[in-house]
Structures are given as C-alpha cells and as structure tokens.
Image 1 (tube, rainbow, N blue to C red):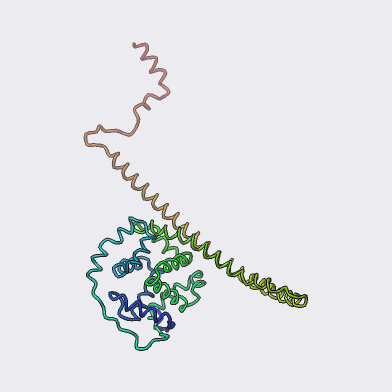
Image 2 (spheres, helix red, strand yellow; image 1 turned 180 degrees about the vertical axis):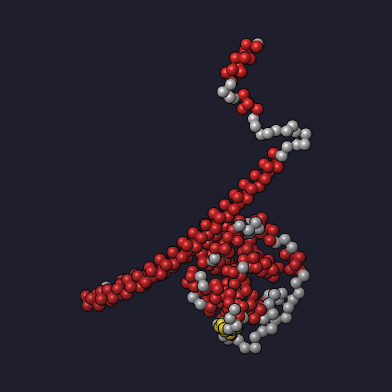
Length: 327
C-alpha cells in the first residue's frame, strides 16, 4: 500500500454546513474532522465493504433526528424498518453529549486523506464506470461530503443521491443488499424508486440540453442580412455540435457497454447462486432418501432382486403347463 498522503479541499459553503451539523448533533460529532472522516468512511464502505456499511448505518440510527428517521421509514419495507428500530430509542437515551470544537478559522479547509483511505478510493476508481462518475479522488470526496451533508439536512435529497449512484455501484454491493434477509425488500424498494427517479432525471437533462438550440433559432430571424449571418452561425454551430455529438456517442457507447457488462455479470452471479442452491437442495434430498431407505433391524434380508422377475424365463410356458396338469 502506498504511504502517500493527499490533501482534499472543502469549499467555504460546505465548511459552514458541516460546522453547523456537527454543532447541532451533540452526540456524534465533536469537530469538522469527525464529520469528514465519518462521511468518507461510509462512502468508501458503500463500494468496498457493504457488511461494514450495514454496521455503520445501524450505529448512526440512534443519532438521527426524527426527519431523518421518517425519510428512512418512507423507503423501507414496514417489517424491515420495525426490525431496524428495535432498541434504537433505548440507545438514544444513553448517548452522552459531546463538546463541540469549532475550527479556529472559517473558509476553505484542507483535509488529508490517510494512506489507507487513499488506497481504497483509488481501488474504487479502477472500475471504469466509477471513474466515469467520479473522475478522480477529489471527485469521489466531493460526492461523499455532499451526500453526508444532505443526509443530515435534507434526507430526501440524500436518497435521490443514492438513486443516481445505484447504476454505478459494484455488483457485489447490490447482490449483498438484494439477498440480505433483513434489508432485501427495502433494497428492492430503492431499486424501483431509482428507476423512476433516473428516468425523470435523464428526461429533465435532455430538455435542459435542448433549450439553447431553440433560443438561437428564435433570435436569428430579424433582417435578411442578419438571417445570413445567423445561418452561418447556425451552420458553424451545427458542425461543432455534430463533432461534439460524435464524441459523446462514442463515450455513451463505451459507457453503455460497461453498464451492460455489469448487468450481465450481476445476472450471471444470480444464476450461479440459484445453481448452488439447487445443488444443495439435491444433496439434502438425496441424503434424506438414503436415510429413509435404511432397513429396520426387524426387516427380512433382501437381495434387491424383485420376486416377480424369477417367474419370467424361457421355461415359463412349461411351468404354466405343469401347473395346469397338476391341478
């Protein structure tokens, strides 16, 4: 593992939000650094270690305010939410209040990632789809901080963040939550919500991207001379747009292939899981049949040769004739 350290910047507006969150939530954060470390750790575990992120989520529950709890309840399956909340109220009552240590100076802050954090983030960025989304270490950090700030201030926005991240998450992470006995139904709710949200999100982006073209066309018809200039501008612009679209299409094709490959791997993993379960079931049934076929100690000896077969031979007609004559 590299011993290199890297400094990440946090802009002044986010610093103000983080300081306020850390100060208002007296049972979990004592400083700006506490908040940032928890945010980075949670986001890294989302991608690398879903088992650990599950523990972090359960540890965070007693510290969450009612609005956060309500937003979680809205996306979770009723039974699974009730199970998650068992004992949370009792734990909350026992939480001690911590003293908050504000930053000596406000403004842009620099946070040094540990070698371990940097190593894990760089491993995440080795995945092509993750690299497309985050670009670099600073990009990953920005998404982590933005999500964690939203979680404590606008929890509904935080879940929209999850919806938009879901297509980029590793197959192993999604398989973990999908097959989890305590969270599987809730994860399916998230998947369904993400599909609806992302379709709307993509549609809004498409409308936004098309708006400038309409404005240009509307403002390019005043006089014949202006129309000529406008036509030239539009032609030049359309040529540039074609070049840009061509480049974007290549990127989109590559990205789509990566996403399809992930879906294929995910389905293959599910297929392997079903096959393994089938093999285990066959083994279990075979074992039960063997046990049930063991003879009791009171059973008569048997050579496994059906008695009826002893009558079927080439001498069967003679045996029948002798039997009739004897009778």
